[in-house]
Structure formats: structure tokens, C-alpha cells
Image (cartoon, rainbow, N blue to C red):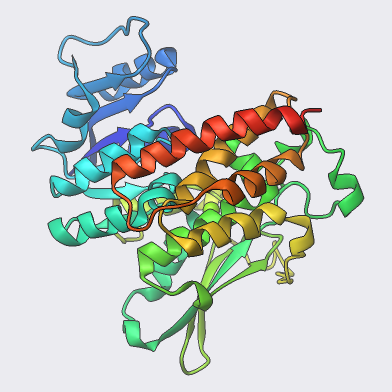
Length: 378
Ligand code: MG
């Protein structure tokens, strides 16, 4: 029996995690649920899963069963009974509670990219110090984790991360100047939240994944290759020094990597009819070079990741504000890359930052983005 706390239970990964838990009532038990503002959904989750604790950011009243207590998020992620914390919140609370959970020796199934992107050095160190494990939930990192099972680290030559290319992979450069939020939200293969779907269209999501992979697997940036793979069937690959390559394949369904993370790297029976992969049905599988001229955000964010210090946190903060402005029709699609470039240019950066330094840099970046957004408005 594994006792779980889920931070961000009402989001896309949170609800899919609960869908997996529903299928394993004897093995997975919900101890704590934490969410932001979706009180109606949180309330229905609490009544279904009857957790010991619940935490909510919204001020509106939450209707809960008699045996459930409302507590702060710290308690949800550090309580003695918790074995595993599923971190699926993109809010900054996700990063603080990941550090708390790891510090308390709790293993963390990590779905929030921002945690490792913005504070990778702190999170990795916390995991080393406490011995608590970070289990990737993202499909690409789950694939790499699976390919590395039984392998000696010294035999690994590099990683090949696949990218679907997002909603605009077949748009011309000219067409890209006129795309709308509605178009950006039409992901070709995965069904996800709004922010991450726009991040897939700009490929910021993929730059985040490269930075995450660098921390999760301690692999240098130069050894990580990204290829366009339209079918989202090969979730990523590992290249070995003898020229051999291992890949992990499967339907694009987040419940598969979520389940693998919840069970600590074990394959469990899953509804074969829904998720079963047949190579003939999704043939052929193709791999192409990414046309980086179409994805200026990708290189900006990746470069920020390579510079380390406060740069990746600044890139993530700018992206968060810029995507929000784009979704509100306040800036055009290409405004996201202009803002990334302009704010990163103005950032002086700090190496080996503390959490406070990171928070301060993010605050500065968000204000600067809003200020500069006036000049790229539609
Ligand atoms: Mg992914």
C-alpha cells in the first residue's frame, strides 16, 4: 500500500493521477489533496477519495467529509503517513513544497516542470542530502528512466528527446505571425492544460524538458538531442556508447507514465483496449530535424538553462506572463519570443542562487515583462 499526497489535484495531471488511483484501490491510497481555486472539483475529489487532509488556496468555503481536515500544504507533503508526493502544481507553491517533501525524506513523483527548471540545483541537492527519490512523470523523462533500467551510467552516450512540434509544426514562418490563442490550443497529439499546450506550440515546453533531463539524469546539455517526431509514440530514447539505442514506445496517454511513477518504476496491468499500442496502426514512425527558425523561444529558453543561475527562472517567469498575455489577446504569438529575448537581455543574473534570490529574480522578470509588453501589444 502506497500513501499518496497530490499537490495540484484538480489540474490535468492531478485528475489523471486520480484516474489511475481509482484503478488500484487496494494499492494506492490518497492521504492528502491540495489544489488552488477549483473548489467544486476539489470538493468532489475529497468526497470520493476521503483523504485525511485537504489544502486549498481559494478563500471560498470547501464542503468536506467529517474525517477530513483542512491543513496547510506543508502538512500535506510532510506528514508521517505520506510515502509519495505527486507534484502536479505549476504554481510557485509546487517548488516550495517539493523542497519540503524531499527534505522530509518523501519521494516525489514530479510533473511540474518549473520545479527543476527554476531551481534544479537546489532540488537535486535536497534529494541527494535526504536520499528521497525524484520520479519523473513527464512522458519523455519516464521513457528515459525506463530505458536506463539495468544500464550502467558510464555506458550512456546521450539522450534523444522527441517533440511533437506542437500546434504550428506545419505552419510557415509567415503564417506564424497571425496565429490565434484558439489555434495554439489545438495540440496535435496530447490533451493537456492551456499553458503547457501553448508552451508546446512555442517549444518552450521542450526546452524545459531538456533542462529537466539535465538535472534528472545528470547528463550534460551537449549530450541531449531533440528530434521532431509527429506521432508521439516514441516518447524518448537513450543512446549508448556502442551505438545501440533504446527507445520507449506507447500511446500518448499520460496515465501510463503516471502509473509507472506511482509504482516506483513497475509496469502494472492497465486497460489494454484503451492504451494498448499496435505498431501497425501507428505506422510509419518518422523522425525529422526541428526547424528552429520556427521556434525562437526554444533556443532562448535553452540558452537561459545553459547559463544556469537565475537565468532559467527568469525565462520561465517571462514565459508564464507572456503566455497569459497571449491567451488574453494582449500580445501576438511572436510577442512571447520578443519578450523572452528582451527581458533575458536585461537580466544581469546571479550564480548559485538561493530560493530567495530565485523568487526575487522571478518577480523582477514578471514586472519587466508586463512593462515591455506595452510595446509589443496588438
Ligand atoms: Mg512532455
